[in-house]
Length: 150
Image (tube, rainbow, N blue to C red; front, side, top):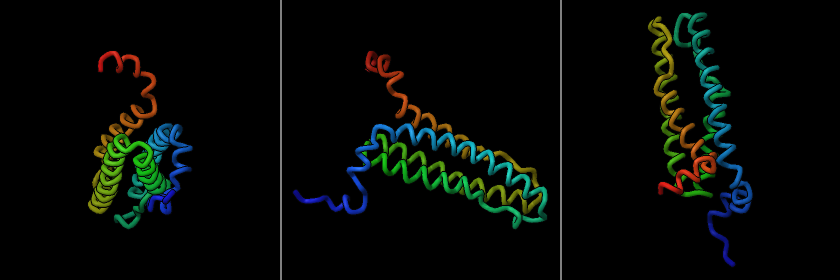
């Protein structure tokens, strides 16, 4: 039996063995992402209050690590569950992009001595990711109702 070229880059057997718990892990990491976003916002506010310019602000490393982990997990989920993984990956990448721009917005606010705003777009993107990750992980809760409708 010939091996797929993808097998040399991604351990497909290992992914298939954790496919059942992957949606739950993703849901937990998404919730951790929300907590790290809150901590990052507090860190930005503290740094802006202490510093004179936007140089005092720096990316919050735990949040960046969770973002990268979430992207990798959503890509792994795409290998196991192509349709659900694609939707989740698009939502996660959208959330990471909004995080990037929210950080830049905080720098502009710090540079101009403005009040720090909440990361509204990243919060909305997080809600969408939580909703879809929850749907993937907790589908068994709504499955009887869903099956009767569809």
